[in-house]
Image: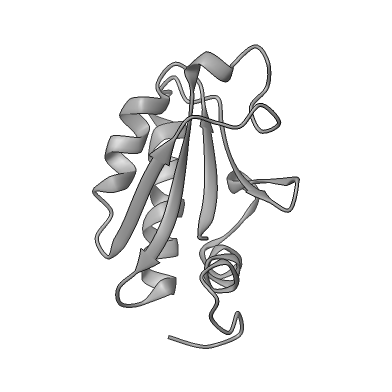
Length: 116
């Protein structure tokens, strides 16, 4: 299944392009489900599904956290990035690389506590 990242805001499409450049990660994209995006942002939202990771999950998680920080620091038109899991939304801004790595491992069917 993979990890679903909901990227919201006018800059969502550009942000996904940058995310797809993260080494070691395979990403598919789709439009958000009606229950995922906020109604006022659904036209400017993209779901990036992380379907595979080659190499270190912690390294990929670190790249993803840095990707989000760079977009936030550069004030791109990405209003929020959330991980959608079991109907819950987890704000990527609230996770560090280790916490994100645990979620990625779990969603990819790996032992969440495994060290790289």
